[in-house]
Length: 89
Image 1: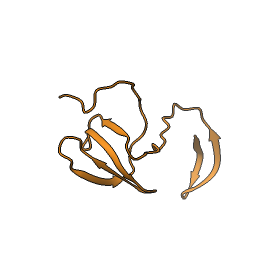
Image 2: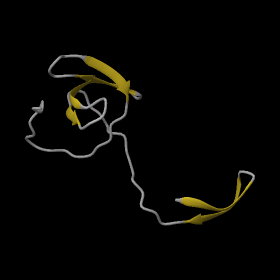
Image 3: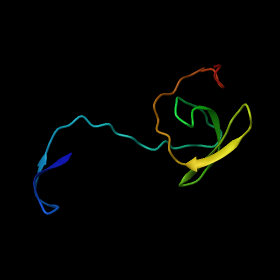
Image 4: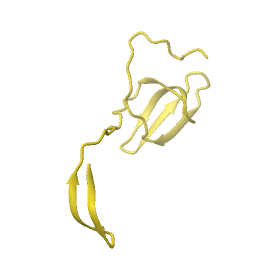
């Protein structure tokens, strides 16, 4: 991370490299047919990937069959073998 040592009128005259604890995120490479569970938030729940473009992901709820299209947003956290899907409440 770069941190300014001296700022004058919005310009940086000198930079120092500082060691910080940083969290790194990478967009998930969605593929049609993948099943997922999103923990929490307004998109929380079980979904199946039914469409992917460079900028959008289209998901379908396995219970209601409702489809939604959102900007690509998910980041990989965990993958589990033999996990129950859809999950019970």
